[in-house]
Length: 110
Length: 115
Image (tube, rainbow over all chains, first blue to last red; front, side, top):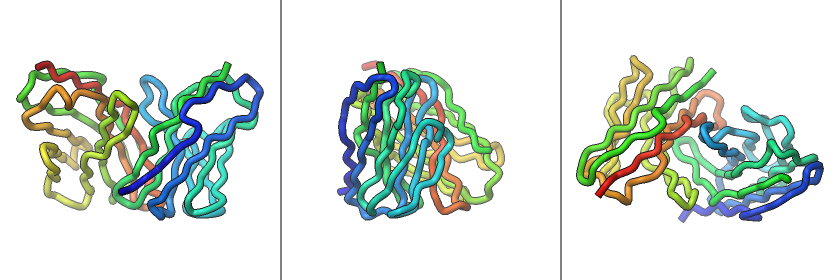
């Protein structure tokens, strides 16, 4: 069974603070993705990775960094969190025809 | 640039057939259209995909698609809908040329199936 896990599931952060969202997959997929979901926008791609050591900018990368230290792990980093980054964040891993999503992390920046 | 558009919401009666529409923009020859359902818990569940290079409409369980490639349009058809089919349905475009398989999502259609 494909498995993507995320931590934390919920996070409250202060403006200007650093936030790290973590993702782990046991699918052995090369590609991993970070999306955010806001009302009325569906899911939008922030960063993605082709494999360990690689990160690429997605459609809305500003204010975010990513790190892929291993095949299994992919992190999303907010160096200076802002209230506009309050959202639900989804990690996914995938092959050419399907992506498997994690349960999501609800981030609130006060 | 890729873009995906969906109708905001729709409703159905139990046992009825539901059609959810999606239109998209892409300049790529090879791509996939995928459908996901988001449960009320937030979980994203993969339903079905249609390759651009396959002229046959795909089917999976009580889901099928009607693919109109020349119109850059695709519909998800849910047969014999049940209240538990209620939720938000997303259409997503994956362009195959770049090898990254990143998805561009529509805004989602909220489906309510009334008993």
